Image 1 (cartoon, rainbow, N blue to C red):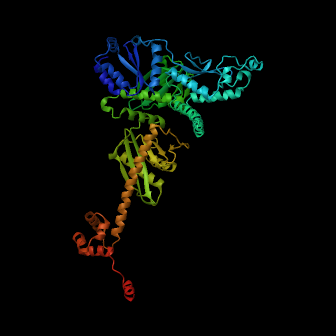
Image 2 (image 1 turned 90 degrees about the vertical axis):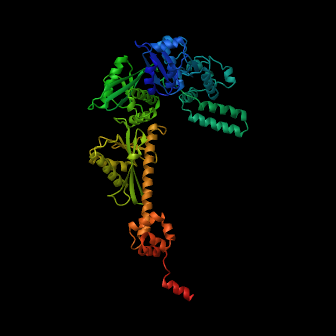
Image 3 (image 1 turned 30 degrees about the horizontal axis):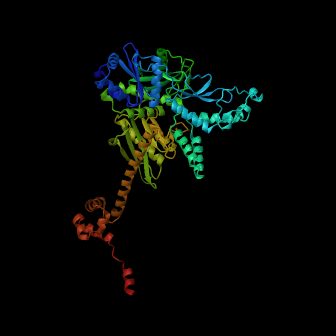
Length: 608
């Protein structure tokens, strides 16, 4: 590969952690490497002048570069190790060894032991890891054994052997590291409860343990046992930095294919990751021309069949973003949470970079991070297209008066302020948010249809089910209810409602999709509120001046333009007012702000 070819590729490379592969023309993997920033690391092969001769030859032989984005540097290290062992690349000679990362294993036996192993056997043990540091594993095991007394011996602790009295407690029992199950001094139920809690810690479910440790630390400190409290504090710090397992080398997700799907006006894309024995060892993307009449479910099922045939995959489970009918005898999983959902999100990120790399520079209007957010939103909301055009409506009124509404428009996840619109409610009297929403939605999209303007891919309504139903009724009148996706977001719990779905969607609070929806909703609320405040201010001024007999809107406007405020008009003398509006009107204005005392009050004062 030449530097000129790489320069064309470079802008599409992600600035994220991942594993890259230099591949020859015959599809032989020449070199596997890891990076915490793929773009910078790959650029170094084409910009540095002091590369070793061997590396220069490898770069010249490469016909293409493949990469897989992962979630962390740890995952990159683990995946690099697995791919080197799988492909045995020629130029990884110094790394081509039998190194295996350590795992933590809970053995499948009575009174299970918890051990470190480099030879994972899923038939004999439950596995957690792998880990990139043996020191980390030993720290975790030491922490577990301090928290939960466990046996370390290899005795066959069957019920028969324990009942026969064949065993005697050892030193570990006497120093408090074991509760003596070999003599029946600890029940199997009590021991298994400890194992259950250990499994939770190793899976990363450490909330209960952290709370218990914190309470213990505070109690020790209150008893002035500061050294013991410091030890517990170190255990807490270790838990906070603990990472339970890797996504790309996973002990419990075996032999599955994970697929992400995307389509635009012209093409459809399918990215797949193949996990063998829990290791993501293959990834490949298919692209096909789109036929508008074909539903996405059928297209994705066809592409998955082609993908599996091309890679000769025999996996018995496929993970997909939405439900499909699949002819082969496999389990189809649409995950909503957990590790399988994280794998699906990882495949989506890799697909995003593939699509971005194939867009022409002139069409690349969104940044990498923006495209990732929009792809995630498309997946979460089940949209058929990337939501590059989103519109949001909000109503505002003050105790039923001055009802107004606002529309904000986001293009490529950014505010398009030139497209913002204010609406004064025309047909609704009183505080009726539902009718107001129906009116403005109808007016907006009737106009877009009349002017042949492009429609948004997503409409967001600031409100709940009632506002959503009102908006949907207007879209139905315009025959747009099947052409545009519409949803509502309720403020209190950030529930997202869709038409004809009684249950709301709850997105993760850290989800980029939810953050984008919240940003759009908040911008609509701000825009509506500012317009409403302006309306209220104008209404107050109008009431103050036009209540004067003989003073109309034009006279009031002339006075305000000169004096800037009603307070300044009140302080002006009659001659100054006459210079602006004439003596006749000036006399009326001056008399309004400076009324003469009545005769009755004068008489009272005189008699007094």
